[in-house]
Image (cartoon, rainbow, N blue to C red; front, side):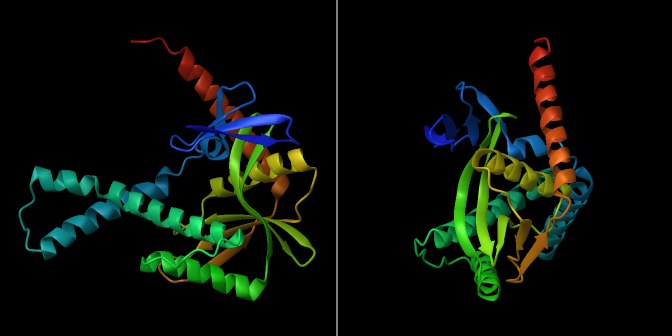
Length: 247
């Protein structure tokens, strides 16, 4: 089901299919998202190590259970273990983000049962107590008429006299493409509203530790240029894929 959103003072209608996480532009055709564009950035090096570690830990756990025979079936399950871990981590991140968004929107969300989700929420509440952000937007749809892409901006907030764009992450590390994503959200927001941010802030949830790790992202001009290069590269790759002859 496609939900329609009005932007640019009602001049623009953007569609969003939540089930497929797909945006539809003014012409009704699918268009790139911020994360879709930055997906061209290679993160394979650290991920390869993580996949190998996930497989090794799975096999060691099976050994500790008394399973000392390495079969093809066991190796096959071990090779797929990273997918399950990734899925569970994504679900945790989604739950934390949804709770924080509801809190910002003053919906008084209930505290969940999952301990790791609670750790992330506790980290957010501790950060809020220490920094006293005045939250303005949460989960705001942004769209660039000039560059034809869309995305969901996590939040905007005032910190004293500073107008900040805030992006939440729930993984164990920070990657370069995250900077470019934030730049993409900022570019589209400022294009539509005419307002200018003072800071780009990326905040990582500590699901294991219950800590919050804020990062001020400097060099917006460079990150914006990098994002636009990602966008151009992704669009070109899509064009080439369409033009490939069918086998």
